[in-house]
Image (cartoon, rainbow over all chains, first blue to last red; front, side, top):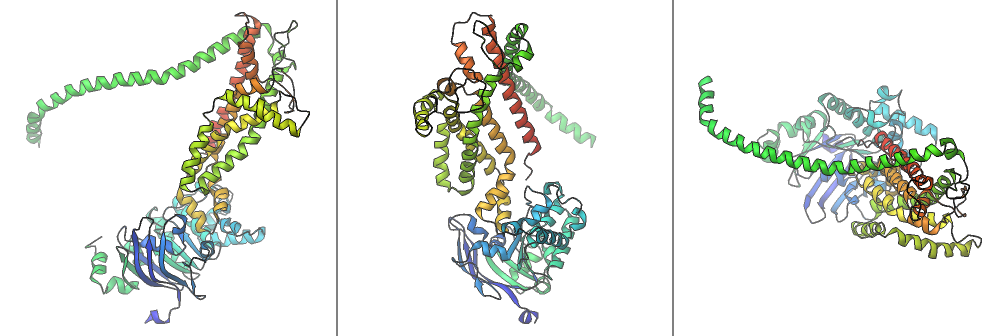
Length: 259
Length: 315
């Protein structure tokens, strides 16, 4: 089996998550993210897939009263990134994120991409220039924007803005990149571009992507996890999940009987 | 198809006409209500137009006696003297100095308060502090005037013994305190209107709270913040009571806040409370001064409008 030889980049161990008020949105999920692979999270709305994804960069810390239970271990250093004494900012420096709706900052294209370097205190103009160019190339946006790097990012199209957000996330060389329904606000052509980009990015980093679009999961991912009501129902190689799911619930969802 | 329509029409005809007649009365009611609402809305427009008209009319009388050049370039404003001179500059300099001092106080404190309330304070702190801050805006300006004259000035005189009893510094400081709530409250509203997704984007990049507040939220809210500043400046320019009480009544062409000087508003209130005969040039001079004041705030409002348009938020 492929799974036994592929190194694990990170893994959730008995991860539960409780929103402020006690809503148990993720229930005892254990799941690996294989290195340089794309893992897709699928499931009906409200099944906890986005909540699960947002545990990986401690996004829930921004709102008071949220509670994690269990562990997310990052390899090779075996850090439990959910531990209280681990600074969420350190975690976010290693694990970056692309959101559902493109959310560029009210700055120039250049400054958007440079943002992560700036907050890390990088002052060397050459280094920033090089990183911005590299990241924009990595996000397949360089050719479209290289002559107008000082333009306001809002002037880009939706698909370009999303690739800009990917470039922004890439510029700091993260180990893992989280995608939270990255194409749900985009048209089919822009969606195809982003999917192609994700496939290429896999060579550099490990990807976890939430999608409500099963075709997308089938197209881009190496592994797929099906979640329902906060629980992980099934996880495995994408080909197998889509052709021979072992659980009835997964099959029902994938074949469209449900969801 | 045709028969179906006919049948439908036949069966529905009475009901439709019935409903139509109801529609008609409802429509009439709507029109009456609309008219009343329109009257209410236009009353403000009419009042503004009337004020502008009177200002222009009386100023016209004034400018028949005084040349516009003298009005704008003469450096002495003594309309009530035996030998009157009508240079508006001393009043403008007083107004600008007081406003400048007020802004030096209010812009930093107001902006920092807004950043704190919007980005750092917990929900409970914000819900407690903001109403208190807004209460400050409800204090009558005469109270602020005496606060300037009887508290701030003596306090300043301990540090600067040469400071005269009437001076623009203490008025400016107090007007600054007065407009902090406007700037803080409106800037905070603008910052809170910045969508959470933008903050999350910043945090996800490993930014701290402070970096997010300064580098992302503040630039995103800049149009609202500038609008808040401009409203604050308008308030400061138009403020009357504080300067009338604490800044002195002598028109004085100076930009030194340690001096006593009259502002446009202080002059108007001083003359308007006197017993000048209607139609005299002294009487008309307050309208000319008022026109200048109005033009200053109008310019500011236009600048504010343009800035808002130019930097309008596109999240």
